[in-house]
Image (cartoon, rainbow, N blue to C red; front, top):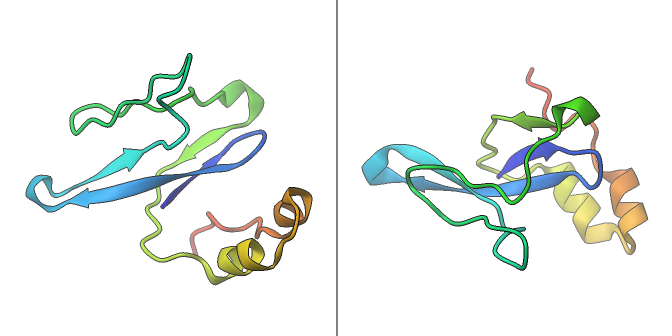
Length: 96
Protein backbone atom coordinates (compact mmCIF):
# COMPACT_ATOMS: atom_id res chain seq x y z
CA UNK A 1 0.00 0.00 0.00
CA UNK A 2 1.06 3.57 -0.59
CA UNK A 3 -0.48 6.64 0.94
CA UNK A 4 -1.84 9.81 -0.59
CA UNK A 5 -2.29 12.81 1.66
CA UNK A 6 -5.52 14.31 0.36
CA UNK A 7 -7.65 17.05 1.84
CA UNK A 8 -10.56 14.68 2.59
CA UNK A 9 -10.50 11.79 2.91
CA UNK A 10 -6.95 10.54 2.89
CA UNK A 11 -6.58 7.68 0.45
CA UNK A 12 -4.32 4.70 0.03
CA UNK A 13 -3.57 3.00 -3.23
CA UNK A 14 -2.92 -0.66 -3.75
CA UNK A 15 0.33 -1.65 -5.37
CA UNK A 16 1.31 -4.85 -7.14
CA UNK A 17 4.89 -5.93 -7.57
CA UNK A 18 5.41 -7.32 -11.08
CA UNK A 19 8.52 -9.48 -10.89
CA UNK A 20 9.08 -9.66 -14.68
CA UNK A 21 9.20 -5.85 -14.79
CA UNK A 22 10.97 -5.47 -11.43
CA UNK A 23 8.45 -2.71 -10.72
CA UNK A 24 5.64 -1.71 -8.39
CA UNK A 25 2.40 -0.88 -10.26
CA UNK A 26 -0.01 1.42 -8.44
CA UNK A 27 -3.75 0.74 -8.57
CA UNK A 28 -6.46 3.28 -7.78
CA UNK A 29 -9.66 1.51 -6.75
CA UNK A 30 -11.70 4.74 -6.93
CA UNK A 31 -11.87 4.65 -10.72
CA UNK A 32 -13.84 3.12 -13.56
CA UNK A 33 -17.24 4.60 -12.88
CA UNK A 34 -19.27 7.29 -14.59
CA UNK A 35 -16.98 10.27 -15.17
CA UNK A 36 -13.86 8.58 -13.77
CA UNK A 37 -11.35 6.73 -15.93
CA UNK A 38 -8.68 4.92 -13.92
CA UNK A 39 -7.58 1.99 -16.05
CA UNK A 40 -4.98 -0.55 -14.95
CA UNK A 41 -1.83 -0.18 -17.01
CA UNK A 42 1.69 -1.56 -16.82
CA UNK A 43 3.06 1.36 -18.83
CA UNK A 44 1.32 4.46 -17.46
CA UNK A 45 -0.41 5.17 -14.17
CA UNK A 46 -3.96 6.48 -14.48
CA UNK A 47 -5.26 7.64 -11.12
CA UNK A 48 -8.95 8.40 -10.66
CA UNK A 49 -8.37 12.03 -9.66
CA UNK A 50 -5.38 14.39 -9.88
CA UNK A 51 -3.52 15.37 -6.73
CA UNK A 52 -4.25 19.01 -5.85
CA UNK A 53 -0.94 20.36 -4.61
CA UNK A 54 -2.50 23.83 -4.17
CA UNK A 55 -4.79 22.30 -1.49
CA UNK A 56 -1.92 20.66 0.39
CA UNK A 57 -2.34 17.19 -1.12
CA UNK A 58 0.72 15.11 -1.90
CA UNK A 59 1.69 11.81 -3.49
CA UNK A 60 3.92 10.02 -1.01
CA UNK A 61 6.16 7.64 -2.95
CA UNK A 62 6.62 5.06 -0.19
CA UNK A 63 5.48 1.46 -0.60
CA UNK A 64 4.31 0.00 2.69
CA UNK A 65 4.87 -3.72 2.26
CA UNK A 66 3.33 -4.41 5.68
CA UNK A 67 0.30 -2.71 7.19
CA UNK A 68 1.02 -0.35 10.08
CA UNK A 69 -0.28 -1.85 13.35
CA UNK A 70 -1.81 1.47 14.41
CA UNK A 71 -3.73 1.69 11.14
CA UNK A 72 -5.04 -1.86 11.53
CA UNK A 73 -6.10 -1.06 15.11
CA UNK A 74 -7.92 2.07 13.97
CA UNK A 75 -9.71 0.18 11.18
CA UNK A 76 -10.65 -2.66 13.51
CA UNK A 77 -11.81 -0.61 16.49
CA UNK A 78 -13.58 2.37 14.87
CA UNK A 79 -17.35 2.27 14.62
CA UNK A 80 -17.81 5.46 12.57
CA UNK A 81 -15.82 7.29 9.92
CA UNK A 82 -15.28 10.21 12.28
CA UNK A 83 -13.86 7.87 14.93
CA UNK A 84 -11.62 6.24 12.33
CA UNK A 85 -10.37 9.56 10.99
CA UNK A 86 -9.49 10.85 14.45
CA UNK A 87 -7.74 7.62 15.49
CA UNK A 88 -5.54 7.15 12.41
CA UNK A 89 -1.88 7.89 13.13
CA UNK A 90 -0.78 11.25 11.77
CA UNK A 91 2.85 10.17 11.37
CA UNK A 92 2.25 7.19 9.09
CA UNK A 93 4.50 8.59 6.34
CA UNK A 94 7.34 9.88 8.44
CA UNK A 95 10.58 8.08 7.76
CA UNK A 96 12.94 7.60 10.70
